[in-house]
Length: 154
Image (tube, rainbow, N blue to C red; front, top):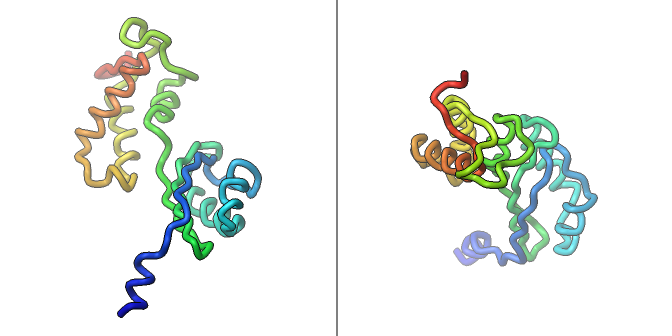
């Protein structure tokens, strides 16, 4: 019984958060120094990460949270790219407005918002949220970037 409890509560050395391009994790910076200081197996992480993110287009920025344990093992969770990245890709802009609320950069249709919400719903933290709530959050992010949401694009 005591051995089972030990396995469940492994001592955590650190929690590391990184943004790594999909399918392009290499033992070079930023991954190498971040994991190397906790003596984690760099090649095992790179292979696992690249295998998990192969369905995304290359150079898609993926957020990854790595839990490093004191016995030099690790677990990691991969989140899909940020909402702002999806909005910029859908709108075809490099950055948002310098004066959101006063100056609109471009417009986006409700269909784009819905598609982004469907992708974000697969995230571990959003999987139990209703789609409508995710859509409202995306609309708020778009408005704060100076992007107007319209029913249909002309």
